[in-house]
Structure formats: C-alpha cells, structure tokens
Length: 286
Image (tube, rainbow, N blue to C red; front, side, top):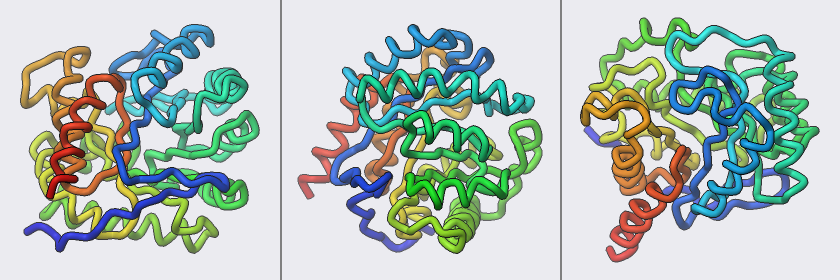
C-alpha cells in the first residue's frame, strides 16, 4: 500500500545557499574512474572531464556530481589517496569555472574533506554516512549539503543482501534512521536529501516496486533524489545494453517526479530534462 501523500520540501540548503525544488533539479554524473559500470575511463583526464561537465550544464544540469570510486555491484574499494587524486583536480577546475554547485560522490571522510577544500558544497554518500564514522562530522562542520543513499553492505556484498518483505517501507525506514543519525551528528535537517538507492542491494523487481511506491520515501519529509540512470533494472525491462538506457532512464525519472522526487542524478541530461519537463507540466496542471 502506498504511503499517504506528503508534499515534497521546496528547498535544499547547501553551504549557505538554497536550491529551490519547485522544479526538477538535474544533477550531472561525472565519473572520473577507470571502471564505472557505464562510462568508466571516458573522463579520467581532467580536460575531458571539464568538457563533459560543460556539456552537462548546457543540457540542463544544475549540479555536477564528481565520483572517483566505482560503486557498481562487485566493485572493489579504491585507495583513499587514489580517490583524492582523481576527484580533487577536477573539482578545483570546476570551481574556478563557476559552472554551478559541485557534489563529491564518496563514502570517505578524507576524500570529502579534500573535495570540500577544493570547492565541493555537497557530499553524496552511497552508504548514507554509515561507512566512515568520521564523515558525519566533516559534513556537519563544513555546512555542506548531504545526499544520503540507501544501500545494504558494500558494493562487493550488496547483491546478497536484497532481502525484503516490503521493500519501499523497509528502505524508507532505513533511510529515516540514517537521516536521524546525521541530524544527531550535527547535520541540519534542511541540508539533507535522501536517495532510495536504485540498483543497490535490490533485485530488478524490487527496484520497480520501490519506484512505484516512492511515496513511502517522500513521506519521510526530506527532499528525495533518485539515480536510476542506466541501471541494470532498466536493462532488465528493455533488453537494452548499458549505453542505450537513457530513454528508459528518462521515463524512470518522470515516474519518480510524479511520485515526489525532486533531484535527479543522470548521465544524459538532455533526454532526462525533456521527460521531466513533460512530467512537471502534467503535475502542475492538476
């Protein structure tokens, strides 16, 4: 059963600024890794990463999310120094160009600290601040925004932990606990966004049920981000390979908007933007 409708929050506070959420906020994925599931190796060079960032902004992104560690299923952890060496030069260049707010996709406090010093104003943690106990105080003290994603285990163990009786309710409950821990650790509520973690410790069927029942997560009262982009469950439905799932991603984003999501993390901003424009116009007409 769907949770009772809750009106999504209308703003997200990051580093003393507000991101207004009365429209779809698109976050461009910028992986500077050699082994990400979709675009690994394409943007390792700083100049190529910057060129891709400029394309994403031109196509409608309001934020850029820079990641230096692959979190695909089965991925092994990368050394902290290697992760820092990947993300910091890119973040520094993006900050100099003032293209927009910059998020760092990391689970680790030293990486977040270095990224914030370089210009990042959001920490996007796939582990919901549960992997590194030092990350919460880093986020709290810096005043940056936080995206807390739902995941069980680690990338190399999560596929074995996709056991739920009621996936949407359990994901919502676990995200609520993560957000409460963040607040207790000094991260103000207005800085927190929650992400149900499509593709992380969920089967294809569970991902679709979670998308359909996303209102359970929205009911927590935090802004909701989603990152279905090119994920395996979309290929399960369409039969398309990973590099041909942007249309399916756009549909998933539109469905998520209708159910209350407001932040959308994607590889192809242009396709997602058009789908979200139609979805937004539809809900605005009610």
